[in-house]
Image (cartoon, rainbow, N blue to C red):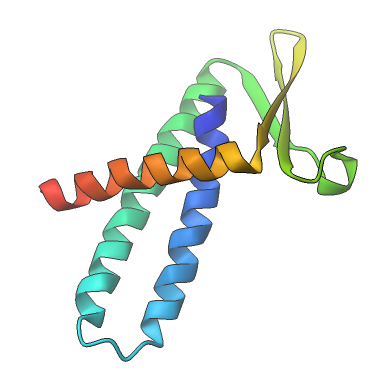
Length: 114
């Protein structure tokens, strides 16, 4: 759940950037791409809301550590608290890229199956 809650906002940011770029594009199939990006955005957002609700139900608090506090600049670092236990969740950028590629593949498959 923690990994999902860390990756999904990154995915939303990436899709939003693509959507804004596509709005200014002159591509002939612009409306198709925009509709697909909006559908993708809705699906990711729904999963993010569901995951955050699961974290809330499990009483897990999660926050991102400021980049200046992360020793290795090639990592994303999050801290969490659950039942008095304080932990750290860290992902290297290479792992984040691989996970995002995998998740985007799953979401795009869902978009086109319906």
